[in-house]
Image (cartoon, rainbow, N blue to C red; front, side, top):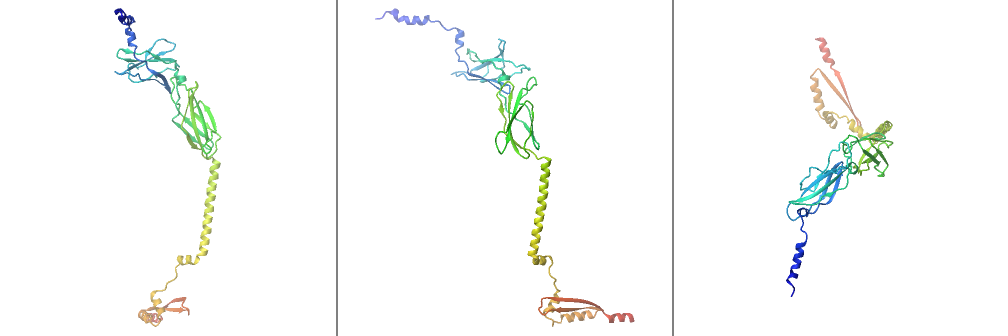
Length: 331
């Protein structure tokens, strides 16, 4: 049977272990993980993974230290629930280097601070692509004008622009032209040719550059080319007119009878004459002459017809009644 003192020995050993202090108890909360700094066009953000807990909402606090100072300061991200903090600030023309740190807090529990390495936004920021590119076409060139991705605090530009351009049909890179100006002229291009271009923007400090979207433009024609086109158009119009004239002439030669018939319809005799020609024994002509004898003047019509009946000649002779004239003189 074991001695009673031997049974109490494990309990005594547990009581003899050092108890955690209040500060050690508050540091039991896990620290944020995957803490990263992200900078895009000098807009700086600190991001981290959320701390997993079974109860309550975890709050986060971010502080900043500008090198070489050792003093930490708040950055308007104290006791926030989001896992992202904007640490963008005006540098007033100075290229500062700073360090950031973040910790989690849940009630009375706090995690350890997690610090980032030294960060220089002007050297580490990612430069975004150009959005607004204005292109003016010329006979042998393309004139480019654009704005820098973002404004510097001191108003000085530190950007380098590399323009890549090529003929659209070949799709092979033709040339790369790098400059610090926001106005670029691509010269020695072909007239009336499509060119595609893309601009990469970077900084002197070696920041990663971004490529803009591909845009395609067509060069215009010069004065000599325009004159040549006008001559070709004029010559083409003359050729077309000559062809139309020849076609019309050949058409008239081949169908001249039909053209003559439609352009000059045949002469048509009056209806009473046609009836007389069909039946010369009809008394219509005698009655017509008698009716006109009652007047002081009359017309006589002589009709001559060929044996074939294909042609008819109508002659109208207007005669003055001599007898009526004599009576007029006697009266």
